[in-house]
Image (cartoon, rainbow, N blue to C red; front, top):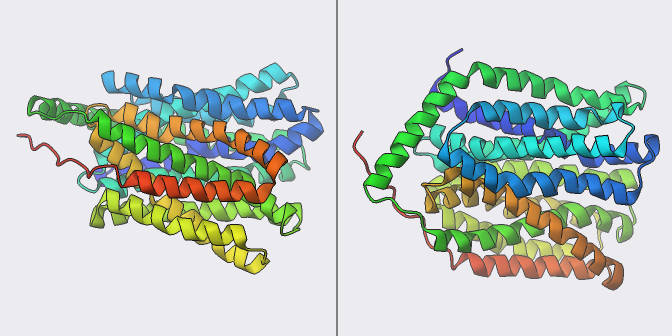
Length: 394
């Protein structure tokens, strides 16, 4: 099946969705593992580390390798590993085997993201913001659909954890489809590599200083994102005094709102510019977070969830695209850092915020998130505009 080049932006979006299904499903699977497999809280945290810590940390390495030699087949392998690792947890009794299975999911995601980010850039043409936002929203949707699909499969199996095998169905199917498109994807990669070499010959250089400034903003944004995902449900339980089920719905609202905002942010970046979109989102998220922190009314808190998630995620896909523009000769590495390492950094900081919550209270953590949002906003004004593209002869 040979599709038009523009259609591959949606192929990469669905590929990203499938690559992130397993990782998104892990938080929903952990309670079942604790009940059915008897793992401890410490072991559960270890599985989370196996997913985000190992996988995200090696993404820049995979990105650097992708910049040297394009291997589109790695995306297919990555999707396959990402889906099949966690889907096997119900069949494993050894914690070591569980750790390896989850690590395989993290490594699979690490294999997919850098090449996926490069390919999303290549097939987007002139509309980089839209192309990267479509790619990014796939990951957001994977994080939202993964938990629902896993719980559905487990429920259909009468509560048996083996029902998580359902996660392998879409990932294996998408992996097979990506294999069938290997030739076409290799063409796009070759075109992109030729364009990069021509641009380098014409004087295109990497601006690592500007990329470093952007990375600081991305790391702060990731910390806020992880903080919202981790502590907003706790606000529902411990401050608004809601049930576990209602508290759990908060994560879904955040994920879906974030996915919509990622798509809007990418299209907006093509219209008004990457920097303006990033700054707009970060400026607007500050009062929303502050109002959420002060709210003790359930309805107002629900209403504030959507703008908090949307404004923060306005900055996501434009940040990835802007990073690629700053270091156009290393698209894979840029993707690995802005999407992978940044998430790992946010995951490392979250436990520290948890300790603050234990000692100083949950409202203190909420105000820390507000301060971090203000710092990210200020830092974004030190990030320069995207450099003009180098024109080369075809």
